Length: 59
Picture 1 (cartoon, one colour):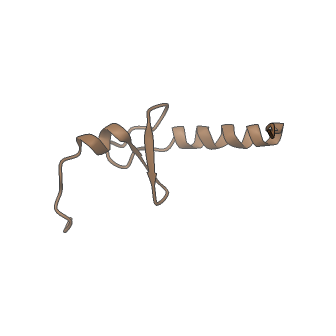
Picture 2 (cartoon, rainbow, N blue to C red):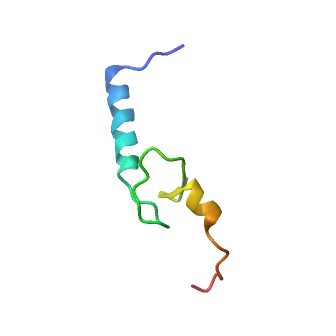
Picture 3 (spheres, one colour):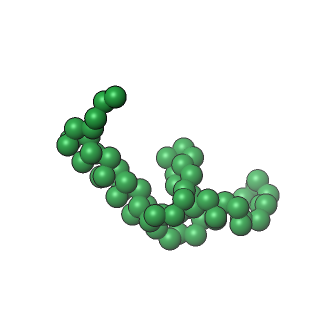
């Protein structure tokens, strides 16, 4: 089993902080510690995707 180096831990923490400060593309609130889904480098809250009504594709 490989343990993480201090550098790898730092990179992981920076990525987590960057994602937490990224706004959800639906509700525009920060992702924070809520569950999220990534699609094509866009971040969405899971709850926002579940609550979103079906919209026509021509928008």
